[in-house]
Length: 231
Image (tube, rainbow, N blue to C red; front, side, top):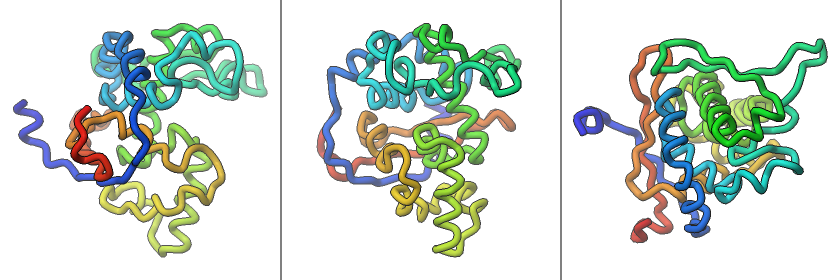
């Protein structure tokens, strides 16, 4: 409570008429203890990662293992698994706040299919996305869906049209002009942010811990379309 009282979060208002799938949320809650552990390790807001799991797979892990372009509850892309062309194994690294060490997890099919490791990889990739975008919660969330290359293209498009530097778009959470250009890249879900955030209660404050300072970046979200509905 003392931490929350010290925060002065930026607000993000959006309109999303799509209702949540309460069954999906209930399925995610089966794994709440795993989400809590991995989010604490990597400084990721638990509600954010759980809402992503509800959106990505309706909370289903074991039904998403054998086919499709992505694996498991956090939808780890199969294209990111295996080895690089030179034969070296692919992996993800992220800072663990509990151990004060850098964790490395190899991106193998076996690891992606393991429930706990799948959630761990999702949390680690989320930390990487936020670091890459100066902890801009909106940009980092959209990048998880679109990928870093498509996100760079989106930012470049917005920058050229609006005459705003890509650094300012990433560094300034209040500058949300890039949201208007999400359909320009033709990849992912242009409304991925809204589809994730609809699972969070109105007035929910997302808190992401920075690796460089240990402090928190925050964003309070409101679905104005359903502002009178409680979850």
